[in-house]
Picture: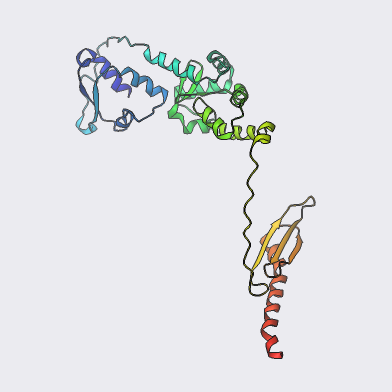
Length: 297
């Protein structure tokens, strides 16, 4: 992308004001130039520098695009005066991504004092990432990250430093809009790892939200069909652990609706099977009695 920008600006005298083709041997650039693509801020800076030109991008395989004297020139290159419109646009993005009741200077100051943010800026600028757990989440989205002064951006969203995250959540939750709307509002402007879970935890522990929220709907009760004989259909489940560490194995015969309970020390398969053997023997005895009783009658 940078090679395209440098090439176009170098030949600005010849291409400005008329349509031309921009040939590249890097196929992924075709998607970056599409209007529907939303690149990170670092690529938007380069795209902004090309917006004043009328061109189309075409892919030319590298095998048919050998290096020539123009790309290997050792002559002193003239310095091109580049408009600062890209930096102004980035300032505009940052200012409009700041939550209400906060200022961009506050975020810049806190970011400059946050050690992790400063380490993250070095990682982004030098593309060298440590193996620490706290950097792994940012490493996965490193292509979306960019820097502006002391501020880190993910696309068009500001990465809030640790010291200001509680304040951002408090400001976003002043109107008690609920989990979905609060997430939608914050996702448009700010980002930090685990932001969704922190929003959910904040609203779950908010007393006013709990009082005004609708009570959960109770699931409808669906009665089961009555079996033809005892021990034909059996239901079982485990409950616990209780304060003493014990669990209770509950077995219910769907025909008699009579519950049987067994206290067990653990929930291993061996323990559960040993307790179920008594019910299996009882079931076998019942079926045997039903089969033999007509003969005696």
